[in-house]
Amino acid sequence: MTDYKALGLRAGLEIHKQLDAGHKLFCRCPIKKSEDFPLSITRRLRPAAGELDVVDPAAIYEFLRNKKFVYKHNPESTCLIELDEKPPDPVNPAALETVLKISRMLGAQIVDEVHVMRKTIIDGSSVSGFQRTALIAMNGSLETSFGEVGIRTISLEEDSATALQKGHDFIEYRLDRLGVPLVEIATSAEMHTPQQAKEVAESLGMLLRSFPVVRGIGSIRQDVNVSIESGARVEIKGFQELEKIPQLVENEVKRQTALLEIKEELHRRGLKELKEKPKDVTALFRDTRASFIERIIASNGRVFALKLPKFAGLLRKGCGDRTFGKELAAYAEAYGFGGIIHSDEDLNKYKLTQDFARLKKELKIQEQDLVLILAGHDNVEKAMNTILERARHCLIGVPEETRVADGMGSKYTRPLPGSGRLYPESDIPAIRIDKNYVAKLKLPKTLKEIKEELSEELTEELAKQLVRSRYFPLFEEFKNFGPRIVATTFLSTFTDLRRRGFPIEKITRDHLFKVFSLVQKGKFSKTALPQIFEQLASGVDVDEVISKFETLSKEEIEKAVKSIVAKNTGKSESVIIGLVMQQLRGRADGRLVAELVRREMK
Image 1: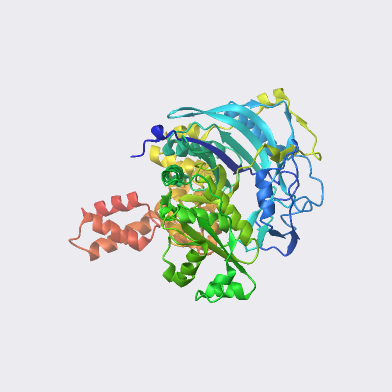
Image 2: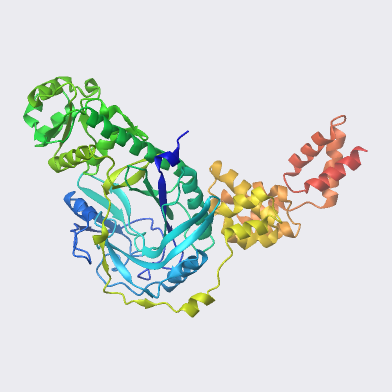
């Protein structure tokens, strides 16, 4: 059992949730996913100094990667504002109002004036090279089972573009998500166990679902900040699976612990500094048996090698959910390379045993030394220098950096951004916040309050499942037809149909209204609902389905019961009831059938 207190674990969260505010934040394009992207533009981005006349280190890193960005777009969901060809419109008022309400519910201090800022981002996810963001409130709090957690900031910002595909020297993006309004909630680093991080993320997620927000995959993202004593703050971006947050935090703790152990081992081996430099060793690999390197050299590519004194055996060491070798390889992957090959590996599988023997002789590799190679065309030397700088940091400990969620762990993407990335947005005037207006805003009930109310009509477990479900808004819309029947339909029937591969998106609100209203009037038996919705999901016309499952008259049911009882003399009551229900296929209420069977059998 890991002693997180002894390790000094500190974790904080940044929750990003898309707001369903009618249209995008700085234009009137609808919030929708396009099916195709007939148009495209291509850009390269350059870093610029921020308000403090400092160029952000993360921006410099992205610029040095020398990527080309291709932006695919559709006029139905994108306009000249996303393409950075036209100044932004004023801030979406509905989105601003929603974030003001969220700020009040978290007890945060709302600013007097909202100033939109530009945040430098040149990884290509914004055509302009920056993301617009505005601080709305500060110093809020959230009650949890382990005490109060501080809310540092609440901001309103625009979402970034989604990557479609990545190549060696390019990234292709789709622009339908770019500009969608987001609320960003940043907590203090007051979580000291992985489970606490999960609880806070879950509580904030439930609070946000009390507001008009976009639902579905990709509409909410959690960035997790993690550090341990003697380690460093690491930001892990883009995690979406709430249930797996504890494992993500646990693996980051293990990774930082392993890096500190590597530092101690290198000091024990007597390594004080790394003076080595990458070396072009293409000539040594001219006669290689490794076909992939042979192809690279034949197409004018190069092979670089790096000697790491005293590192032998360390790249096999576990480092979170992967080896330290894979940890280093991520620095090459950031430049578009597939990875590195090193002397701690089984070189036979690459057919590189003889090549590495020559390489070790050329570089004078000793028993405790390690050598690695990287082969490619562009940026090979830059990527290798990045790996060298990372190896040098092993003598210091854990580097501060931005990582991206990858399975149950994370991998390196770029350095942590600095304070130089923000500067004012000159195209949007400041917005004065009227305190009287804010005080009069009507706040929604929290899902926790709604769950307590629902527990009076449903079981506590059913109420708990419902408020966390994607179907909760539909439940709110149709609950007057009978909360238990409606809840069971969404949580049980729909879940079962989805698992069995039925396209439940074919079931419309009109279908739901017709079916639930007929059940309420007694025209359908509730036992027929699974079959009714199965047929609707299969595309059968709603009127045809209604005619198939309309409840039989009592006389028709009695006739069926008498016939089945007569044909099954000696069978038990429960068997007879089952046979009747099977024959009538949901067109009779189960309680009435049971009553008629008992009467007939007597």
